[in-house]
Length: 275
Image 1 (tube, rainbow, N blue to C red):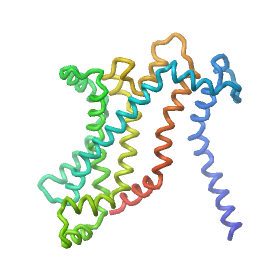
Image 2 (tube, one colour):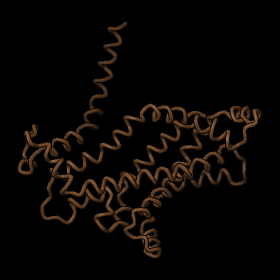
Image 3 (tube, helix red, strand yellow):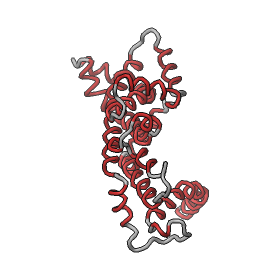
Image 4 (cartoon, helix red, strand yellow):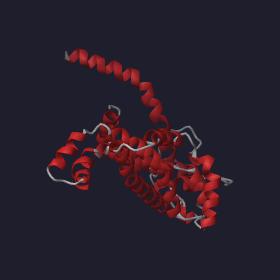
């Protein structure tokens, strides 16, 4: 039995190995390039020099990486929290209350996901100019939260529908009000869905480029995607070792979030798909 299981594992890994290689290859090239000295970036060498890790130290100062990292964390965390604060009550209402136009509202949420932010960016830019919010990191945070609300409501309501109503009715019979039942009974059961939604919202805000490029003007307000883009755009010479070091470092927070919350991610996606 153990031998057959081992052979099956070997076969599975052989089948999956092309996918693994294709997924890891860009990150491997990025890390190897980040570890090379500037004079050896374009040479076909695969082993970094002894002082290669100094590229990350010089990159931090030369690219203003620390400030951009703080801006991205600030924007992504607040946009995620703001989106969840609005989306949780909306998803609960869609799941638990029967009101006129509910199905239309669900379809409307789905249709909004077909619109790219690029389609709205011109009107959004004119609105921010009229409000005097150009180059405001807080304005970008609000825009990110607003763009992710429809997605968050759609994700949460599909999971909320799997939570039995009997649990809430039992709490009501014990004398708990709707608010207390929501906080003490319903939301603890919905933690996997909220974590999954928070992860996707955070990643959307972390990686967003077009809106930030349109609304942010000064380097002090740049988020990581714009800061890294500025290292390549409009330059006569590109310091690829700094670009790759900054790009690799920008992926670390998302990788840590995925590794830390992986069990919630799998649970939320599996249970939310069953009604």
